[in-house]
Amino acid sequence: MSPETVMDTYAEQARLEPADAWFGFKQLLPLSFFVAAFGLAFGLAAAQEGLSEGSIVLMSALVFAGTSQFAALDIWGTQVPLVPLIITTFAINARHLLMGASLYPWLRHLSLPKRYGIMLFASDANWAMAMQGFHKGERALGILFGGGLAIWSFWMIGTWLGLYFGSAIEDPFSIGLDMVLGCFLLAMTLGGRKDLRTFIIWVVAGASAMMAYWWLPANSHVVVGALSGGLLGALWMEKKPK
Image 1 (cartoon, one colour):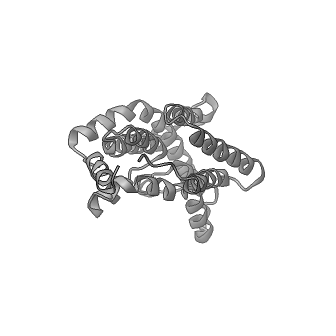
Image 2 (cartoon, one colour; image 1 turned 90 degrees about the vertical axis):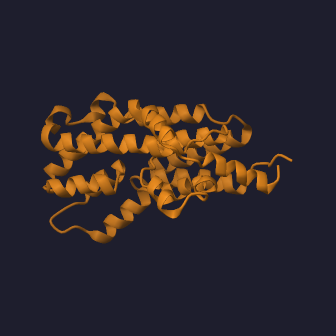
Image 3 (tube, one colour; image 1 turned 45 degrees about the vertical axis):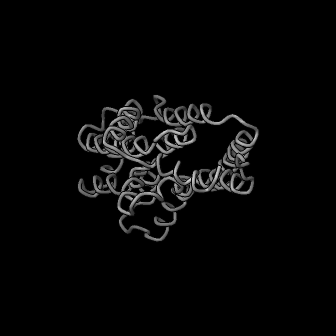
């Protein structure tokens, strides 16, 4: 396959039409209901920390990263430690650097406003589903954008509900809601490519994340697992078809 043919294929897959976005929205809608429960828990926790309603809603709208937002609440106080807060947020979300790099072959064909507008709604779930579609030769930008918009919308709805009705679910982890996203991503992994290279990359990433979870500071396992798997994938290049 010539470089020109590969580029044309990426460009064709990078098309984004309203129907694609609506399809992606509907695809991620079932998962989004569980995301709303986490938003509810965050809204409640943030209100209990004394944050204003405007600050809570603005944080959910612009940061859109549940783990980072909960971590920020852990170190929130009368005087906010700005540097540790920035470092913590960056460390937890460092995996987005690899997510962006993996999407570059398709996003590069879009204008800058579209490219970064779509990435504002990137999360683990819609990224994993979009990458699965891309590798099948499908136009999956609708999954990335529309699915991300669904998750973001319900995260915002959950945050708002947490501010006003949060006492209904004070601890979503106690009823197993924390397992929903993990099970979804596991299903995406099992439905992806099945070859020795992919299997070994996942094993290395998973083992590295588990060791970091046991022996390194909190939340570092996310970064360690993503970097170890990403670096191995970058060094062990996939064979291109002739």
